[in-house]
Length: 153
Image 1 (spheres, helix red, strand yellow):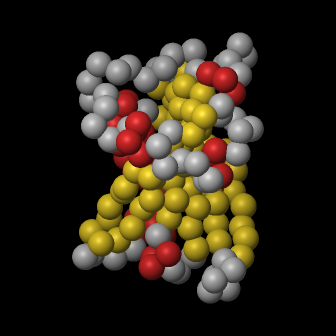
Image 2 (cartoon, rainbow, N blue to C red; image 1 turned 180 degrees about the vertical axis):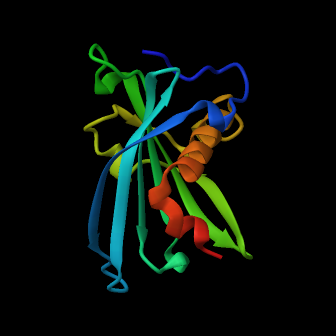
C-alpha cells in the first residue's frame, strides 16, 4: 500500500475521506454528550491513514481531539508498520487552530492499530508536518459529521 510522500507538501484535496463509525458518550467534567467519529483516508485508491475525532457537543470551550494512524495499510501490514499522531483543535480569538501534541496517552496510541506514538517534536519542523496538516485539512473539510466543529466560533 502507498504511504504519504515525504518530498514536499500535498494538497489536501488529493485525499478522499471514508466515514467508518460513530459513537456517543458522556463528558465527566460537564455532563455534555460526547461524540467520536472515525474513518479512513485514501489517496489514489489506497488507504494512507485512519482517523478519530472526538468532542463534547455544544462545548467549543472543550475543543476537539484529532488522532491519526499513519504508515502502511493493507493485508500484509501490521501495527508495527504504523504510528500515531495527535492534534488538538481549539477556537482561539474566533479562529480555528490545530496544534500538534504528543500522541502518547491518546486514543490512537493504545497499541491496537499502531506500534508507536509520536511526540510533537518528531513532527513539527520535519517533512512529516505538511503531510499531517494536509490530512487534517482533508478530514476537517471532507467529513460532514464535523459540521458542528466547523461552525464553532
